[in-house]
Structure formats: C-alpha cells, structure tokens
Length: 522
Image 1 (spheres, rainbow, N blue to C red):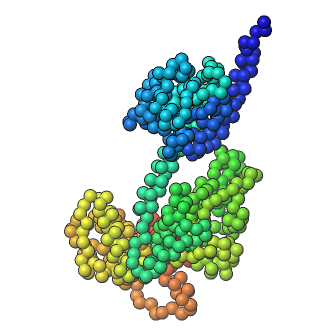
Image 2: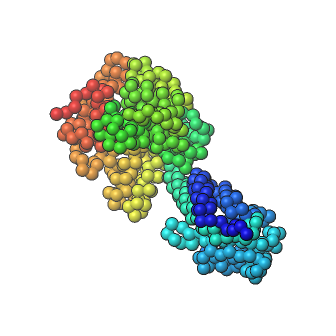
Image 3: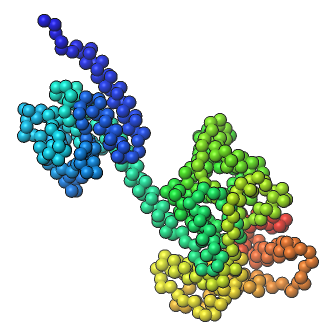
C-alpha cells in the first residue's frame, strides 16, 4: 500500500509558496489607503489562499463591547455587529488564541444566530486574533467553510501569518485616517482664522472675485502695496478651494539669494553643490496638491524667471544636480508690490512669465482708500490683542476715530495692526484718545506719538517745498527718498529702527533704497 502522507519536502515547498503569496498580498494591501477596499481585499485574499468559501475581518469596538465584521454578505450596509463575547470570534478576542471549529463535532460553539442573519450554514471555521504593533488585540480574522475537508494546522499557520500583515495594513490605514482627520481639523482652524474684514465697495468686489476663482486651478496675480493683505487673500483662495487639506507654502522671493533660488524652488540632489550634503525637496514638491504663493515675484532674476516659466508650462521639474523628471501639481499664486507691467517694459520681468501668471489679477486697495474699514479693522485687531493680553477692550473716542480715518496709513493694514497691538499691551485707560495713537507718520508728515524703544522726538520738520517739476513718477520717487531719509535721520542711522518707523522689514527697506538709488548710511 502506497503512503500518501505528504513528505517534509512537500510541506516545505507548499509553505514557501504560501509565504510568497502572503508577501505578495501584503504588498498590495500596503498600497491601499482606504479602509473599505482594504477589508474587501483581505477577505478575498484569505478565501483564495485557504480555499475557503467566505472570510471576514472583525474590528473590536471595546467601549461598546461589539465586534464589527466586514464584509458581511447579505447584511444591510455590509457590516455584521455581534456582542464581543458571542461565538467563535468572541472567544478568540477574549482569549487571544486561534480557534478551529468543525460544526458537526462542536455544534454548540458556532453562533447559529449569525448563521440565521446571514442565511448561511457554517460547517468549518478558522479564526485568529489581530494584534497591533504594540501587541494590543484589536480584532479577529475569520475564514469559513473550507471547500475540501476541514482547516488544518498549515491553514492556521497561514492565516496567522496573513493576519499579522493584515494588522499592519489596517493600522497604517487607521493612522492615515487619523492623520487626514487631524489635517482637516487644522485646515479648518486655519481657515477660520483667515478673514477679509471690511465692507467698502472695493473689498466687497474683491471678496466676490475670490469666491469665484478660489475653487479653480487658475493662476492668480495679487498686486498691492506692502501691508495691504496679499497673504490673507492668498490664504482665502487656498482654504476656499478643494486643495484646503493640502499644504499652503509661501515663498518670499526677495529673501532668497539668486544663486539659491533654483534649489529653494525646485529642490536639489545630494552633492549638487558644496553645501548639498543631502537631497532636499523644493517648495514646488512640498506644495504638491496644494497651493504655492510666490511673494515678491518681481525680485526673481531673469534667469530664475525662465526656469519658473518652464515649470509652470510643463508641470514638471528637475532638481538642481538631478536628471529625474518630477511631476508637480501645485497651484501657483504670485504677489508683488511692484508694477510688473512697467517692469516688463523696462526688460526687468519676462513678458511670457507675466502673461502666464496674469490669468486673474486681484488688486488690493491701500488702507487709505477703504474709508470706514479702518475702524472695523482697528476694532477687530484691538479686540484680538486685548483678549491675548487678558484685559478689557478700551473704546475709541470720537476724536480718535477721526484721527484713525484721517491718517494716510503708509504701512497699510500691517501698520494699523501693529498700532493696535501696542495699544492693547501699553494703554491703561478704558478709552483711547488721539494722544494715545502712536502713528508712524501723521498726515502732515510728522510723528504724533512714540513706539516702545524708539525716540519720542518727532521727525524733523522740513520747510515747505514748491511743487517739483517733472512727471508724477519722478515726484513720487523724490518724495519716497526724502521720506526714508528723514526716518533714518530720526533713528540716528539705525536701519532696523528706521524700518520699524516706516512699517517695513529691514530687508525691504534696503531693497527700496536700492530701487531709489539711495546710498546706505555709513
């Protein structure tokens, strides 16, 4: 009589084939990022591998003492809910040990209530626990009705191995869901903080245009003076779009040295230049799927403008020192306080890039043209800073309100915000008088107040000057140069102090002086 018992070699070869199959299955699972498709894939893989009729994954809802089984054919919403102490699955999650059952020999173990729900008859069953990376038991993996005979030791070993990979894949998906949920919450919180405050006609028109263009992929060019709120509008566009859960990356092009602009925007490979000790993603890659704001776009050199245009046109980039083409899906918003059209005429900005960026143009009005919005913004900022300072919000007197609306606000919203911050922390009265308003420069050209750490002396008065001859541009240039020179004089040559007086960043002040052909002080 011939011995039909499988040899050790046959068992080893079968085990190797199963392990290869398990690894192939696990690889596919780890590429699936949605829970429902993943559970279905797991059930299908287990039935194929173990030659079973059905399979289900049960996740343990410990607080409610329930086991949630999916997929569950024949059940509404494809989910089976059973108490966590019932049947074979209940025993497995309570004991943490695998269990094989033959309904003919152990009919009392099988939960016939479930069979009745499913309109199905269980003959054989194999169930193993699901454990996370820390060893915590969070569910069970079950296969039902082996097509030939009963489930064996080899089947149990195979399902245990499959369950280990299933647990990793499930944890990854659940972690990803938690991360996405957290990202959505953070995005919502950030969106709630971004508000375009004002009721003036120009702001209402701007708000209406933002609503129309936000959920498109159109390039938007934001133009306006320093401090008018270009970053706020860019944030609104991002958070009102379908990209709101993806990154919003802002790049100040004026702050990037020309030699490093390519690396900053497009990334670099290790060894691409002396300091490139490791590969690094650029801002386009970091903003993939989201929004990239290129602030002060006019400060990019012509060479870097050409590289930027190529990326915008082809939607691909190559890192500095690299050769691999990388796809990018970043929506680009550009902002500038300069007249880019004039820069094109003077050959300082590429015409093709200008037209590529200028699909939609939004011009932000200066604060001096927004009328009563000044008071709305002042009260908003003062309320916000007083809440942080844990003090009652003081009220503006009628004369203070007139002074606020009469000021030309050379620093725009940024200047107003800074003033309200000073008032919130430094004023002690319950009302704010005109003397409390520490303007940087008054409508008459002199300082009306002091900023902490700065001299209380007003900017020195200058004799009246006859209207200059020449174009308005020439007159504006001369006025700006004189304006800056007086601030530097009051600050005794301290450029940081002068920049603060003018409502500018120090680097922006230097750049403005270069534009005006002004000499830097010794």
